[in-house]
Length: 309
Image (cartoon, rainbow, N blue to C red; front, top):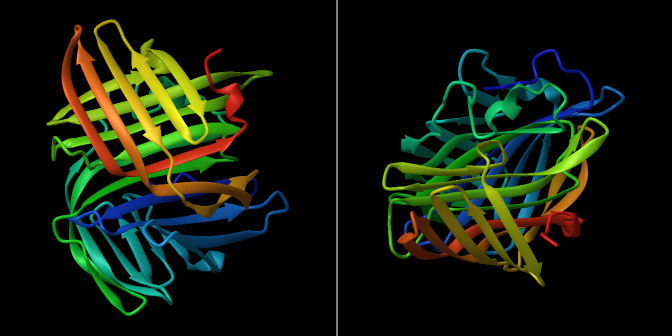
């Protein structure tokens, strides 16, 4: 749901909808949101990202067209609508609707209402993060530049961010498509987190496999190793009984606009066609190995602060 009630400045909020069709030839992302500058000026927006053609669009709206509901996740933005059950689009280059079913949500636990764990309760965090659905099925079609794209049998992912700014440096990756299982989904992130007068390197990962979620995070006590060389990375998370090994290779991406103190003036690069290799171990036994060719990947900012020495 929307967190910006009562906010007037230095604030942003946005949702990220990723849609990949059944044969993985099309990968699109839609990011509706709102921006509030330091001087109180506001506007709403929808960013469109085309991973296959490496193209992006930024559509700006008057803030009065941004109409979230207060009791459920449903946003009307101009003639467009976004919720956990569907998106409906009426943009200059893209129109249509896609429905979502069988959503896999991040489980809520006592003291940990979402993917951020107890950090969700800290009021001065620079950026908050939430998962609407790790993995769900798609049904529907979009008319994109006079081409019909069917998403029946495809897969989707929904997350959101809100706060003041994106982190100074971060790595983010996500995929629902693995060659060895149709019931696997990965989200992983490592970020520079301001904390009082200092900072720490925070990390979160969730690997959903055939109905089971394996969690690795700063707040769970998991250990992390990160190495980045040229546009490739190795990322390992390890807990007392489980370990996940991630290797990713960036592909050519597109430029997206990101928030700085609520204002959409930053720039980041994201690919929806990065490649990924994952191994999951439990009590020393490998229980999953798979590869993905349709991975969302962002490497942003001063990455040297994130890597292990």
